[in-house]
Length: 228
Image (cartoon, rainbow, N blue to C red):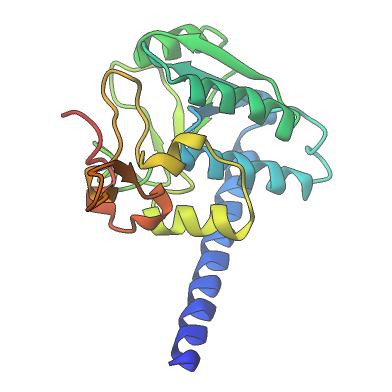
């Protein structure tokens, strides 16, 4: 039994390292095609974007020609943001020594505003295949017609929910405190609640609590706390 557990942990670690290597390859391809001034990172304080920011931060430190340059980071605030998310975004500016530009409004409108700066050519995003409308995305793919023309770069496309949490817990990456209280997919206060699949009911008192997000490993249940 012990041997099997150790083998499984080893395989999981190898798989994670392989996926990190793939992300680095996508970063390399991106910065071969575009300069730092032509790329920005879309960030929302969620777990996927947090992993992406951490990976990009570590990758850039390995690149002597560009590591001293700052990549543009844009946080698109939802209509009713969680205070915990806002606090975490502010924390990230200190953790990674970056400036995170905050904008509020509809995604398409903000991208149109951002792309008034004609130098911007690509956006790095934390999309995964299990996210809504992402099932047919590729690692690098232009925006759809009638949207501002940008290359969408999706380094985490084939990562699972379990991969994301393996990375966060393995490398001790800071994350939004809401994930400790049953939230597994973050929108805003109007459309997000703790995931019911993580609910615990005390048999004596009836008190309801929630297990942390990293205990949910099934991707199809990840958005169960989001309003349809």
